[in-house]
Image (cartoon, rainbow, N blue to C red; front, side, top):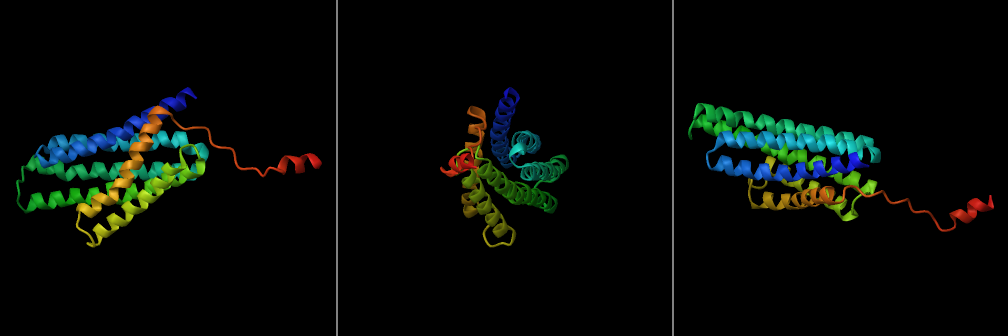
Length: 214
């Protein structure tokens, strides 16, 4: 139980760290501090990887297939994020400025963001929310928020992929709000309470009488 509590707290802290590093990376890139942005995104990728491993350990007893699927998707997300740092690092090394090369490298980074922190995270959030709903180790509303938010992010990012809505625009940002709320709530629960004992399945009131009668 002590190990489970430690794993839960560590996973919660890593979840919060992913939000901090992702926001700071955007600020760093926008201010021209490309190397700092790369470092922050590498830390972001490591945070994603860590949450995948820890939640695999914590949630495997409640649904092995979905826990493994989540961990694999989280690993894929981390890999895409890490790959997305390469064009920004090349941009920093080449000091490409604002020419065609800079635009191409920036577009590669944007594409990695759309895939890793857009499409992949949407699917792994749905898987996690679904698992939490069935496991009944957190409030049901949290699992529903994960499933619904993940679907909304998936729709929003597919819409960006096919130019239905502007890339990184207001609509896309609004689509991401439920997943943001889900991850913050989930992180706080992991830090403060951990996973509660699963509720016992509902049993009809007359079952004990029928068993005794036999």
